[in-house]
Length: 152
Image 1: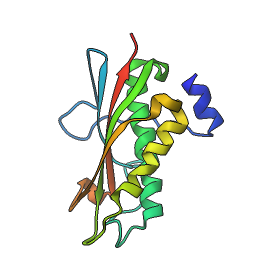
Image 2: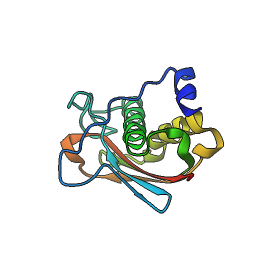
Image 3: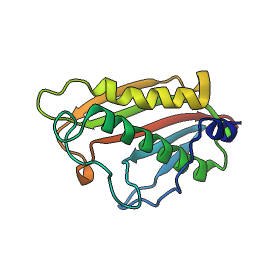
Image 4: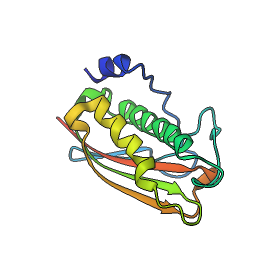
């Protein structure tokens, strides 16, 4: 069902990529799935780099957020076999590498919230934190981690 919804939205999940460092991309424990922070690398490259509100526009950051969501779903699917096991998106935490004085982190991370709701419907509605940070890995403007509840 979720796969069909992705097709309807004309979305394609990228291949799940192995982590670059010493951690696992997904941990499943008692029906709760934790997905490590996803950065918007495509073929190893972040399309836009820098701070949102300076070198990167809100719209560019939102584009990168969409990539993070699809990468997270790709990791989840690889770990559990099918996205149809998602019972609820529980929480996302979005980190926005912010220029001094930039205070619109919530607008940037809203793109993730909207996309997850588009994909999962009411199951996609979730708790959320949007945080402005000074620096992120690879000078990426955004990073997102996820918590999902799964059915048995």
